[in-house]
Image (cartoon, rainbow, N blue to C red; front, side, top):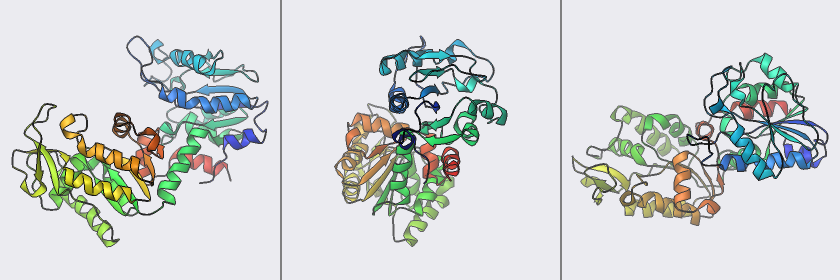
Length: 396
């Protein structure tokens, strides 16, 4: 995908003295006292801001935070805690600007934070009037917010239509590169792992991947539905019987391409869904009517691990069992460790996936960890994200 990269503009000296507007993703969790509880997104935004400052630009940064009502600013919607954290990370004063759409005072070598962009009327519906006003504030627009790349809003799409220059920041560019490497030009075999509770929430992803991958590993409730589709009994496990035909269609698409959806040969069951439930390993053909399948079995996990270690590219979205419970974490842990040990390029994304990566300490062994939840899923569905589309068009 061809986009203008902010790093190239800076390297060429084209950002010096320019007014740079950065759309970052600073939507961080806070407690009821307004204290930030996890600042990964803020830390991830710093390289782009620092790049602009080092290049001699006058820097404006904005983001959404929470779910404010347009036109109705409330104290809990304020980016004030984010400004305080940016002060600390950048080691410089970061002023918070309110009512900024009509104009912003910012000097070269200075950075200001523009208050919650979703408070502005017309942001979510991408009002052309708002987009044009925001574009007039800057010489260069930089989108560095992959987490909102799937939304065509004022600060993610509209401003990019009207700004003199529209480009991708380092975080967004890294996502584009990782996605291209994993899905557009993958080293083979390409193996995808899709876990989660419901086939219905991931059906379009499964269908899209079935046309691309050499192996499609399913886990969690999704695997139960596929086991049912393969004629196996699953007891009282979570599944979607009304989607058996859809599951069989995915299996058939893979089979026609000489690829496969590996069906578990053993599982870990319990009589109840709880952390202290007794875990029992069973053959997949021996699941009782009152059993709950809560993980893949050790035999299945070992087979999948061998396949992952031989892969050329791995895409991972979702755990393969209830990894939050110690008795049912083995499958996800074995998968995680196999990805870490594989020489394949790996791309991982999704909240539960990131939690598993953190739990097993394999962050440094994963090729690229995506910062976007919904955006990452839409990429796996084969959709072109609005932010990618407009930046690509502006690069022509």
